[in-house]
Image (cartoon, rainbow, N blue to C red; front, side):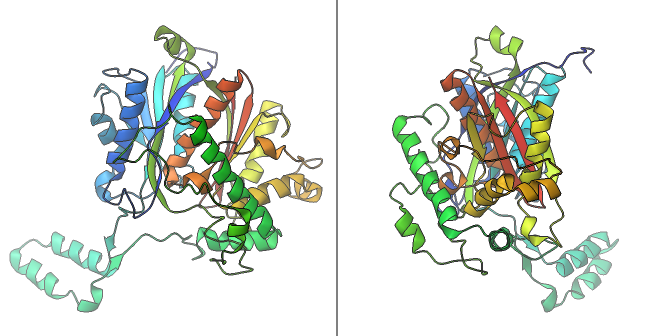
Length: 426
């Protein structure tokens, strides 16, 4: 461990991702390892890291096959980095990429490493499928048998009814509800109007389309399998079109396919370093990773709160940094659903909620929504669970660098009633 008594600044050098695509389309036969390796190699080539031994590479996937137990290490070995670069896997649902970033940033800040990459990858096209528990248990008994005869006896105990498969479910194990089901409850409970949800979606597509037109993403993306652009983008969408869509998660029916993020495949990564390491190699410093906060909520009894942990994380983060909610040039609020963004903003403006639930003297207040998700977010880009964090950090760091100085706030919800808030600045 470093003997330094000071905490160092953590530089964000740059990011890379492959285009995100709707599940069961172009990347249907691409694995997490293939996508993550492609994203890493694009970053390595852009910043001339070939052959270098970095301090660490951290990341992961939410949906992993059993063969992917050492996913990030295998990805590193498939890149042009030195094979001496260690790697570690993380998993915290949609917050996986951000937790990997916090891990790398903390190690750099404490002087334990000089450089590192954080990332994430996910595919629901190549999802792991397991056998039924009954069949699995009986096959394990067969494996424990000491003789051929004993194995045959145990095999004969397998019934036809034992045979089955288990596929991943997009639902909370403790409630049996999907994220969308929980979020429809959120929208109904906190009265988030349909028009607010549709407006979040419309702005997401409009802003991402403009980002592509401007070339904003040109130095942040590596083509993969012939794809050069997120295929979930709908540049021609309108509020009128969005208003015609039917609800898909019950309740009042305000959540639709149009104002919800789609199941998506993709990968992303971000290069972090100490200032000294970056300057020695003549690398740019886009911004600095400064503060982070992770929060969790009870959501089994309070089903309306599943994706609202960032509402609680943000005020704690602001207190750490000595800032107000309005002290930011850009806001990146993960668009799991338009209703989540609407609920976040509404609750921060609610004086009673802020006093009773957040323990604050008053409301956090409103933000200038013209600064919100200005290059599009998860509804337009798609949301490969573990890859979203890297996309958001990369976008925000570049925005701040283009401005010359400033500060950005990240708010990201995750399954299990968890969420993260992060401040990036320059």
